[in-house]
Length: 129
Image (cartoon, rainbow, N blue to C red; front, side, top):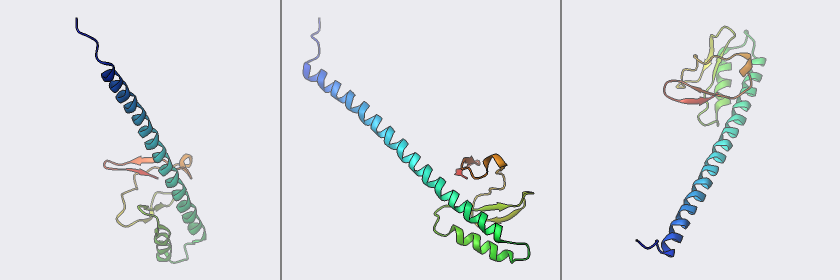
């Protein structure tokens, strides 16, 4: 009959197992907290951009220069890292699309998603829109 493992070995294994569980749990909580923080920051930023774009559109009339409206949209995006803009009319015709941005014409927006932020994916990336 083999003697049981030493007390030192048993305590070492127990300490290592406990440490692994505690650190894994702490890491998971930290990762979730950071992810939720950045999602909330994205929502705030996107809603700010949305309100500013809505205001610019409400002030624009067909008699005004479309180039000035496009310049206003480009100005809105300044300082918002990674933000792109795609604006279309009620028929789905693009009024403005950020140069070099992803093709967002496939995004279907209905009234249920107006002023809400959600995730949308194309074949390569996931976007928060």
